[in-house]
Amino acid sequence: MTTTLAATKVIGEERMLLENISWDTYEALSDNLGEQSPGVHLAYDNGSLEIMTVSHGHERYGRLIGRLIESLTFELDIPIRGGGSTTLKRKLKKKGLEPDECYWTQNEARIRGKRKLVLPNDPPPDLAVEVEITRTVLDRLPIYAAFGVPEIWRFDGEELHVHELHKGRYREKKQSLAFPFLPLDKIVEFIQQIDETSLIRSFIDWVRSDILPAYEEKKDEDSRQQQQAALTSPRRSAMNVVGKILAADAGAPLAIVAGMDDGNLARVRWNKSCSRR
Image 1: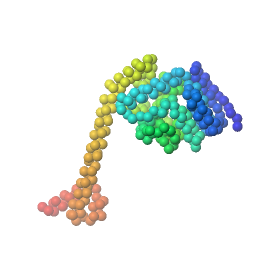
Image 2: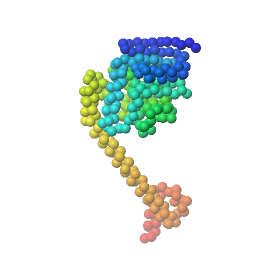
Image 3: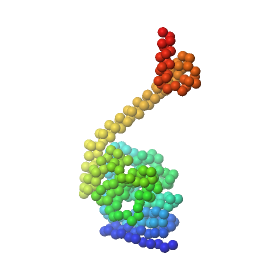
Image 4: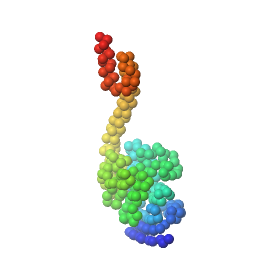
């Protein structure tokens, strides 16, 4: 087996692509580099292995986006589980990688308290963040798709692109699946600020003034609708039972009564009341 190499470089960042790498070799590199070199990310797809050393700018953008997500969910009281650069891998699919950041939102309860992630027994992250200051030499989206990650945020240093999984492939969307109420262009505006303390403070102020009121109003409306549905459903069921008993008493065979809808039951009750006058 012959190993081939391709490489791209920028200041402080390097990507290398190795071909014909076995799964066992990938796992050995992943286990050792994960402990000793946190600044090195690996991506593996059926024998192709990308090794990337991340730059300071790459790490900074990843952490800033992560801090904004965490500040947002804190202010809106949304349960979330952060996974950082947790290695996602599946031997049967011969695929693996480390996102810059990842989060469980919709599936937070299913992953809560777990100390080890085992795919596919555990759900994949609901959202993964990819910083791509330099062009990747290995396409990472098919790897994420194989794991079933519903949403990817890709930031190139200037623009934030959102990709949503649909029928096994990603398509670019205008809004986030995890946070549909969030104007994504505002995320880029905040990222471009220099002082991180001021950035987080101004972002939180913006969330409290522009996002929180509408979010809480929608949350209250959803709660009222659920309560109304819970109250209406038993009442409607009880009325149906009563109606069927009255309909049977009016002479309708029980087999017919059992299949009646609300309209037919109402007509039977009306006919019965008229016959008694």
